[in-house]
Length: 327
Image (cartoon, rainbow, N blue to C red; front, side):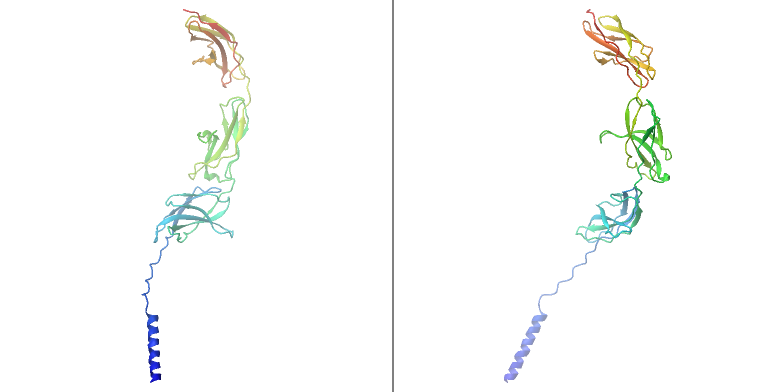
């Protein structure tokens, strides 16, 4: 009976242990899987240069979480370096600028989406580009055949197929970033020189050259600066024999002898009264007299200067002083 009791107690202990093992809280149900973003589809590239390109893609499908950002990667072919993250953006359906590429280098570019939890989606199929050589900027402008008012300016074309070039612009660079550029001359794709006219004698001009591309790019990076200094010219001689020919309380009339021309014909004369130029100059070199208003009892100092067709002024004539009579 003792052995029988021990057997019964043993069976009860085994049953209790089995119940403890098989009992307990019900197992938790498995959570739903998290779906990453879909795959973007590259739409194309534009504005390829030596170091930049614009890339566009169609948006990826949204997974479990919203898409937070698109990441653009560049893989440099022929190298073992890791793929480089070149830009991030939230934009889609627009061309995104990719910067910092190496000239004359082949890359594979691809895009992947990343959601708000940080989960990335698959990479898009890559698009292959080869950046242009660094010589995509024209050479600096060089001046030849320089005279007092004209100069021939030429430049070296960039190392770009002429089919890509729409033309060139010769530009006066702005003195400050807020000033607009001034295009002095424009040419076609096969013309790399211009004849400048209307320059001022003895004056320095600074120019740069940019390329206009046929693929829609507005302009290339500018060339180095070039300087043109025109030849000085001989100015007209000062007018002589300045005389007050008529004087009343309210008006004065001056006359003078013509200036001798320098390198260019005389264009007109300017009269200065008490240091300031009269508002109306003599319109032709043949008119060598002028009448202007005065005030009774006031004193005046007057002189005359000639200006030639190149815009060069003579030295002043002698100064004549007078006092208008009182009424």
